[in-house]
Image (cartoon, rainbow, N blue to C red; front, side, top):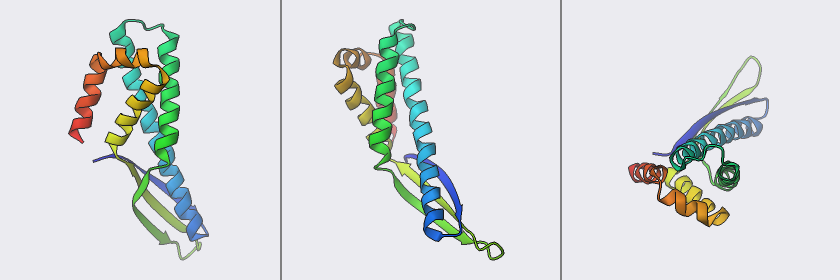
Amino acid sequence: GGIAAVGEGISTRQDLAKEKARNEGLGKLAEILEQKIQRLTKAFVEEVGSGNNPQISETFSKVQKNVANAKLSGAIVKDSKLTKNSKTGQFMAGALVMIDPKTINTSILDELKKTDDKLYQQFRSSKGFEELEKEMDKK
């Protein structure tokens, strides 16, 4: 289990093709993390009943950026494949990049607590927190 994405890269240099594939995979992982945190934010805002609360959106946005920056550096290339086109001389690389979901979920909670303890306490008592815990237990 884990959050994973596949990236592709093409270059006449083998090392650049691999790096491009890894970077594309990381970019896709960042998008997945962003969506995951946005879903948590939406669920929490709907439960709290303050859909127009800019503090909640701002806090979760900060959490999202910090978690993505910190955890993407820990992403690993789980599998990769490299082929060479004999006609063009270019290498094509594919990389499966992944992150353990428990690490991400724990980081979301830790970052939220650091950013705004009062909001974190509200989140802990919410249905969104229960859903996050259930998701963490699945993995």
